[in-house]
Length: 168
Image (cartoon, rainbow, N blue to C red; front, side):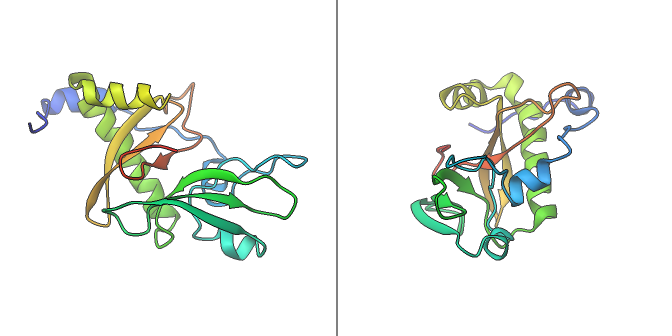
């Protein structure tokens, strides 16, 4: 069943102001955040620039998306002696502007369609996410999710693609 598009006035009301992001969103997504001690890093959902930044990076593939080339989930260890972290990754061919645009598109899709669809709420609840939405990546619609709603008081800190319709 196709999604029903709400009226233009409803769309405007639901998406007014657009998503809000924390100031460190780009760093969190593209470089990851350092955690003291032997713990795993946080963030890092693109390997676009990480390989050059972390020459000892070790990546172990967990799952490759069956539809969208280069979307995958991997266990990544940024430095020797640190624990690996499992994450899903946007294609390494996507630059920061492309990732930011995809997250914005998914947030907007969520705001427009989730109030009228249980699919969005059920998927977000299944993975303990604040929201999920669809965005076009390499010609395919891909679910993207986040743990924060993207409001001025609770801006988006991280967002990541689903791999084979699953979040990691």
